[in-house]
Structures are given as structure tokens and as C-alpha cells.
Amino acid sequence: MTFAVLVMMIRIKNIILIYNFEMVKTKKKTRKIGTRKNTLFKTDHIVFFDDDFERNIQPFRDQFPKIKSILIPPYNTKSYTQILNDKSDFYYPIEFSKKYKDNRYAQYLVKGLDMKHSKNLCNQCSNMTNQGITVSQINKIIKWSNTPSKKERTVLFDLDNTLIICNLILSYKDLENTTFSVEEIAQYISGTTERYDALLLMFFYLRKNGVACKIFTNNGWANREIDEKYFLFFLKLMQVFDPKMKEDDIIFGKRDKIQTFKKNKVMMKMYKK
Ligand SMILES: [Mg+2]
Image 1 (cartoon, rainbow, N blue to C red):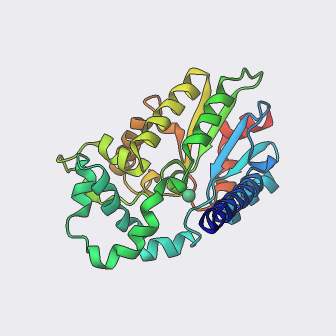
Image 2 (cartoon, rainbow, N blue to C red):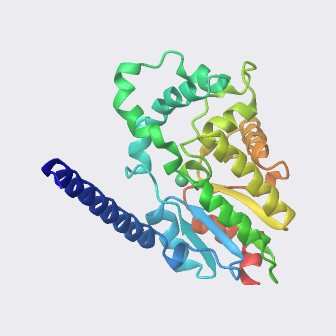
């Protein structure tokens, strides 16, 4: 065996060792995330998905132990307020518009955006499917809905960074804009076309299997009291994902989802069953 071959063999061995080490590390991480508290069981009949652990998931687990409150880990560890102040969502259109050149909503958002200043955040946004419910989680929800249940079932979805991969920040003039469609906005806030298709399929199966679907959000667009017109636009946008969604399926959290839930007679009746 020549010296060169020996060196090469040691290198290959090291690569294999490093590779194995990474696999173990990844496996460990996956196990950590997949806690029982975040796993769907066929006995779960009210399920709540949200990315805000402190203000929503933990209080819900304390107050309503019969609800399966599942944390959607946020990709961005910054608080909600910080995200809005930094307006990180506004850097996302650049990435999206480069990938989906035919999405007119993304192209419209990109106009006037400063590439130089958004560069760093753009890099962070390159893997946007890390935010919100993932496609693999969507498949698990579909599987869960396909399992027969003795009880009536309801799924509550938080909107921002849970159902969609960013914070929905629409401009009021978007309502009247006819250069893009409501479907193009829906595709944009889904992150990728694969995830968009998966969401549509998920709602299709949930409804087919008799599972009630609700949007449970603090996003101001769901606040009917501000302006009926905006609320109806929001409903129209949600109906792109779920054509069976009705006005009552949009629950505005009023910044206190616990109290809102307690005051919702339909939901409390369901909870007590
Ligand atoms: Mg959220």
C-alpha cells in the first residue's frame, strides 16, 4: 500500500466518522422536537396550532388540558413585536419573486425594495419553509383526520408564522388592486408552491372527514369591528385555502386568546363534550 493510498483511506474514514456523528446529532435534535405534547393522537378532538409558546401554547395547556395545543417552532426567535419593527417580512418578497417569477403579487411587493439593505435578511429567509406548519406536519394532520373519531373534531390554526410562513401585512390598497389575484397573495404567504398545495389538500381532507376548521388569530385583518370590508377580504383570502370557510370560522383573538376562547359559546360547548 502506497503512502498516498493510506492517507486517502484515513481521510475517507474520517469523512464517514464525521457523517455518522452528524446523523446522531440530527437524530437527537429530531427526538427533542417531537415531544408527546406536540404529537397528534387519534383521541385528540380539539387541536390548536400556534407559534407563540409564552402567550398562547403554555397558557392553553394550563387552562384547557383537553385541547391538544401544538407549538409550531418559530424560525425567527425574535419576539412578534421585534419582527414587526424590523419588518423582516418585507425582505421575503425578494427571495420569493426570484423563485416565482409569475407571481404578480410578489413582483408588486418587490418594486422599490432596497436589495442592498435587505441582503443579510434575505439570506436568513432562503429556507422559508422552516416557518409555519411544515409539509410533513400537514401530512400528519391529514393522516390524523383520516382516522375515524367518536367525537366531533375541531382544528384551530393561528395565522401568522403558523398557517402562513410570515406575518400577513396587507396594504389597504391591495384590496382594490386588480393587477394580481387573491390566489397569488395566498401562494406568496404560503412560502412555496409545494406548501401551498399541501395546505389546500389539508383543508380538503379536514372538511371531507368532518373536522371543523377555524382561523384563530390576533391579526388585525380578522377584526370585524375595524371595517367589515377588510374582514371580508381576509375571509376571501382564507377561502383560497379552504373554500368551505365561513365568517364564523374566523375567530379574532383580541390579543387574549384564552379569554376569547372562553367567551366563544360554540367552542366552549365543544370543549365540554
Ligand atoms: Mg403566530
